[in-house]
Length: 234
Image (cartoon, one colour):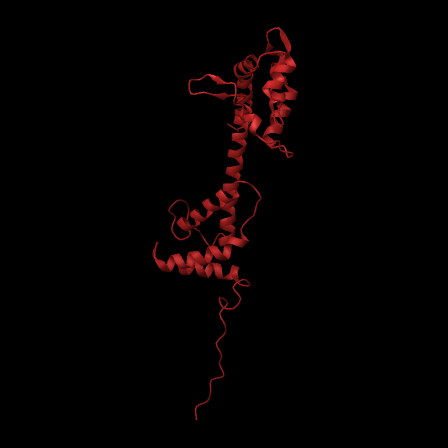
């Protein structure tokens, strides 16, 4: 009579509740994926599993550009998890898959933030729309279309502090002819969000919009751009 074996197979850590062992499954799935050629159904199947397991464990951020950064991260993952097609390939000796993905995601979020700040500066420093001919379009003011944000971006706060301080006195010195009260310092500060419209400024100083905007572009904007460049924002 044969004895029934009393040896039972130990359950694999990859079996059971996938949520409970998802982080443990990731290195196994990466190894499995990379055993198959790029583009093969077997690799794609394992990459899909990795994405599903890792998606809820990545860094979250409530920003308008988060989804763009996340999409870039997944593309980077697919191209470089096994082979370094667009960057250095994933090295399990340097950290977990989640650490690798989160590092790249945060880098892309930082890039998006910097680009967003630069766009904000461009809008702030371009008072009126400009036609293809180079003429100023008096009817278009991009600044007026920017909603006021209660959380002042660091870049705008830097500009405000720089303009108020005016350490060399240049912004206070430059003014519209016969109107010493209309200086570059005044216009730069008044045009920062939440900004005064050119129409309201024209009424306040009893000057045409064209005079104010032309003075701002010719005399004030170069100082603003110079400051932004010195801070590494342009």
